[in-house]
Length: 549
Image (cartoon, rainbow, N blue to C red; front, side, top):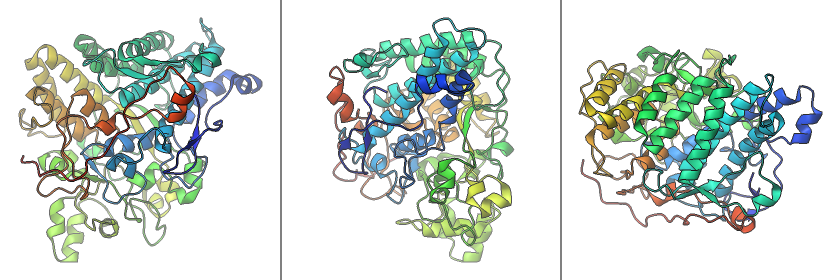
């Protein structure tokens, strides 16, 4: 990583120490049996399940890449965080400046993962052999993935808006220690060209590679990453080309698969292109009652009388869907079934409430319990059941089984929506046709033009607003919200009549909020003299006047 630091407490100033978690050194690799293969495995094996940042089970948001999904998504409008705890900083714009530990989190994680990639690439050399070619391809693909996230989190302006806008420093396998102390932030143009260069090589090295599961990238994932990159760059022809290539061999989830009570978003299926998985022996599962995990935050079907664990299920700290977004989803759209109807809170008889909740779970009493326990909210409306507990009845009684879930990193549905947007930006009629075909897989009654609200950037076309709505609903909770808001130059709307957002944080903006431009940790800028920083974000001082839809 660039200049490494690990921090002490949630609101303290940073303290520099040498990180030791989830990264490997060249010497460790060279001394180990099966050295190269072990190094390749380390790239994806550390994406989740480890206390990589703190090394301590006391930090319940220290569980890897899925935790960054939540940090990014609560920064916007579509994911509501009713009780302020582990994700308060990103929902309320607090402690996000460079002197706080939350600025260190992405630096420790992402540059640690990048270091693992660089070790593999250093071992493989400039011209990988037949035995190291696929491993080098995996390292290049994942390094591109990590830098793509960093660029979108830290750039204040998008590639399309300003190619000279700074992102983050690039650290390659050839970067020396001395270089780290004078390593400026790459511009958008430099970063995205670097990403594409990695992906070009990865595409070449992974040709013919047959992976054993979706937990490592193959050539199709490289196509998907190229589609993402060209979407950001607004190179519409290439975005469409690679999105189409990436779709080959995958199938869009059916409505039944999307809403499955047993396997919904916890088990890879024919739509998953890339994923990660928690393992039963992961520290995030074994320690702290498995409460420092994605499952604890997102899976609300955990028996309160047998297990009694889980931040979402039993501690009163679930994540909700934004009420307005929910209300824009037609009842004919299968995705609406993933969220509890707000109207159920108007039912006065508890037995009738339980009957209504039985449409969402085998255990409606647990859902009612989770709602009542929700601190500062006390309702069931908006509770999500998109991400289901794993392991069936056993998992619902035992969080050490139930929280051992897989989490998607790329699904083929994203490729269909990239293809539609890219096609539509070249020929709107063709884009509408593709978008409509996709939307009908979720809602057979879909009619184009019903989801194109123009708040935020009014210059965005009705067509792109319609695509954005599909992305917001399709990928709720999967970490896309901040990226799309910044890419489309949208504002956020939290204040409106009937909102379920928390009082005091009901903010409306006409452009991407400042807090979506993450600050670089102070330790980096202290030691890397060429590295500039983003502005320390400040929260609005009062709730906004209610927005009129």
